[in-house]
Amino acid sequence: MANDRPIPTPWRQHWLRIRYQLLPILVFGGTVLLTISLWRHHAGLPNAVGEVEVVTYDVIAPASGTLLAVAWTCSAHPDVDCGEPGTCPVCKNALAARQPLLYQKVDANQVVVRMDTTLLRRQIDIQQAQIEMLKAQVEEAKARHQEALALATVARNDQERDAYGDARRLAMDVERFRLAYATRQAEIAGDTVELQRQTEWLKEMEKSVAEGAESRWAYWNARMARDVIQERLNSSREPMAEAGRQLKQAEDARDKLVADIAKLPQALPPGLETVLAPIQADIRVQAEQIRELEAQLAAATIRTPVAGTICRVDFHAGQNVAAGQPILSIAAEGPDRHIIAYLREPQAVQAKVNMPVLVRIRTLPLQTIRGVVTEVGPRVEQIPRQHLGDPRAREWGLPIRIRIPGDTTVHPGELVDVTFGIAANH
Image (cartoon, rainbow, N blue to C red; front, side, top):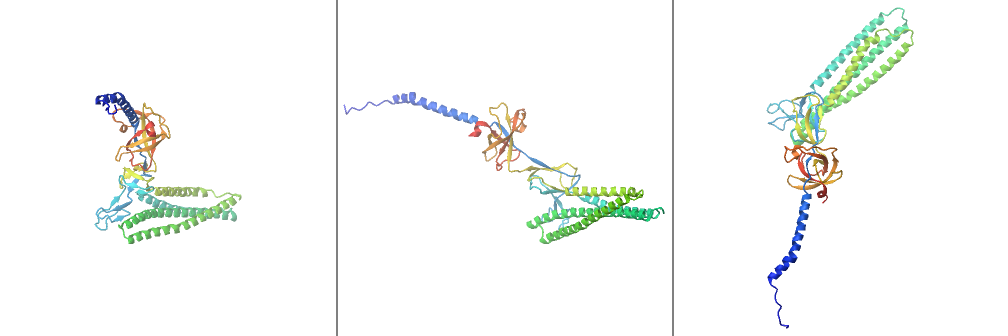
């Protein structure tokens, strides 16, 4: 019996055993795995289409006028760079304005365009001429009052005559010092405009020297011209302060004398304040107009409010613009990026603040990043057409704002896929 060999099991019997015992287990396990895979794939489908938020700032014209470029250059000789329009010293062709270009990167507070200040300078000249005319009127009024004083009644005693004469003299001195102060103001305003223009031009010259487009000799000439204006402006401030002190002293003396005259039996001669009132009103008007011109001159140099990229240019150098019109628009670049998505109805998920989401970038290289819901809209809105697969359809959804990392490579206005809920937690 020890040498008897076992009877081999036929292959058919082995196959039947596998078919009825092992195969059902394998089929069941595969079905479970396939179900889990399909469920995870379905749960990971995007719930919404989002758009990278576009934050734009309009650069507004502060006043009506003509736009000027920051610098002028020659198309045939790029090394020629001037701070004002003219002709090329090499080829004698007209210089072309160098102005902001579409999609140009700009820094915050960068000068992009200027307003033509020729009219403002003419207005300053007019104000100075009017101040000179007021000076002549003051002298004429002074002469008339001196003549009236000489023809005063004999009955007026010496004390009254001297008091009234001093009152007229002090009143004239006050107006003369007031006009001197206004004249200094006008001179300082004109020098301030010129200093601002020379300073901006010197900055452009520094860039040109660094790039090798301008010589150091030209740079030092421009700097010397700027320093001359700065020195003249600095030297004008002390005389202006002195004029202000003289005006204050004259007003104090006048007020004291008027108070003393009020104690006399007879009041001030009729007509003195009446004659001086129009001149005083004109002087106040001139002072207010000078202050207004100074504010306009300060706003004539237009700077960028934020750093970013120029996304629209409405006006160019040489064109006329009305006050309040946008000159150009800048797409801001900040440390944070945001996406605006619309959660269609009905959805199985409910968006909440601080809820994690997955954002899938459509452009190459394809990547999936994490985001966080920062705001949820208060009401359902119509979804923009660019978010829809069929632009002819009309759909509504809940607007949601999502923050993504600032270093994400996306462009403002770019469409992305957003997944809320379970998939975002894996």
